[in-house]
Every structure is written in C-alpha cells, then in structure tokens.
Image (cartoon, rainbow, N blue to C red; front, side, top):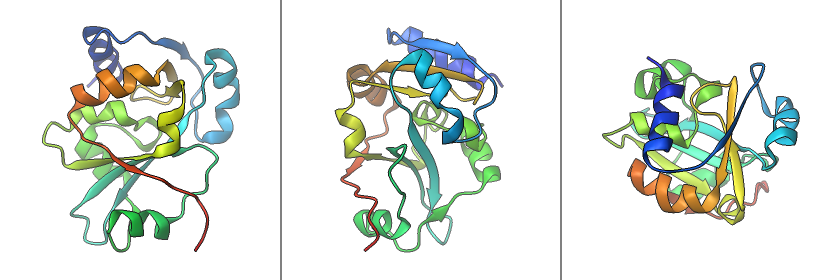
Length: 168
C-alpha cells in the first residue's frame, strides 16, 4: 500500500501543481518550521475525531497555532462529546497513521464515512502545506486548487466552521 504514491498520482491526474520536499519524520507542529522555510506556506493541523459511540468520524483541519477546544467544535457541529479517534481506526479507515493523515487521505474514503470539517480561517490562505499520506514528505499547493479541484474530486463536502480557539 503506497498511500503517498497514490495521493501524488491523483494530484497529477487532476492537474494540481504542487511542490514537494522530503525530510526527517515530522512528529508534530514543532518539527514543521524548517519545512515551511523550504516550501513557504503554513501547515494546518489535521485532527481525526469521533463521537462517543465511535459511529461518526471527522477530519478537522484547523489553523496550526489555534487552540483546539473540543467543546467549541462539538457545539458548532451539534455533536456531543467529541474525542480523538484512535490510530487503529484511522489505519483501518484510511490506511494512514496519525502523522500522515490529511485531507488528501480522504481519497481512500470512497464511502464518505469521514466528515471533513475545515476551520474557515484556512480557506483565506493563498497556499498551504500538508503531508501526502506520510510524515516524511510535505507538499505545498494553492488553496484555490485545493478548493476548486481537490475538494470536488474527493467528493467530501466540507463543513466550514468559524473557530475561535477560545474556551467558553
């Protein structure tokens, strides 16, 4: 299973230009500044979430340095008790590990079992960086291409939330 290869092939098939760098494993947001220095645009965080019953799953894209407040996201989605999905479920559903999950991973969710949720502030960016299914590669692409080509091709209609990151 070559998830990064499949993701990059899909971008090429769709005519989406991107820049890519390979690097040491990025284990968290603290590892990203050298990559941003090479590629330019910022990264957003990708959080795999689920409801208490583990029957509904969400991929939340949130501004990298914005605090994630479970209560805020739960309330705005109308879902009680959101929590982080586990690594085994993520691997079963998308074939990626937590460090490699990103919206491009939704290519491997043809049944749309995972709801895509995007922090509205991200959609204002000109460009963004993300990992293509593995945390040892990063790509940068325009947000216009992401919004007008990638999202429609993935077929996951995003829920856009205005997140503050402020505790209520």
